[in-house]
Image 1 (cartoon, one colour):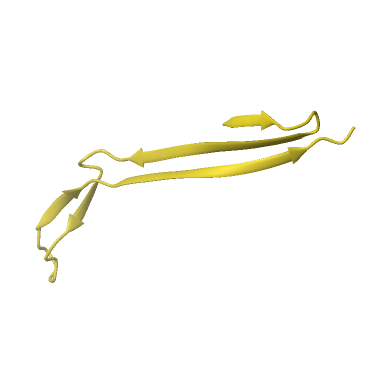
Image 2: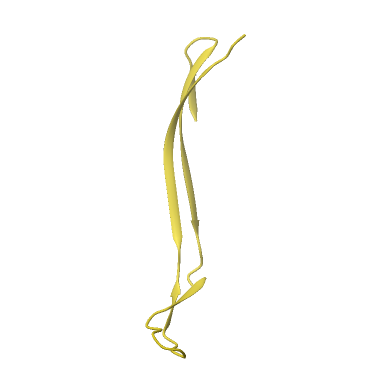
Length: 63
């Protein structure tokens, strides 16, 4: 976050965020081709997600 005081009571700012989470390679198994009971065609799965963003803010302080 970077902020700048325009006056003693008024300031503006800009900032950024980054957030990520992920799992191990073998955290979940997915059954591919399990159209009948007893089939064993499975794959190991990995999941990941990343988010980022920017924001602006302004604040005014009342004495």
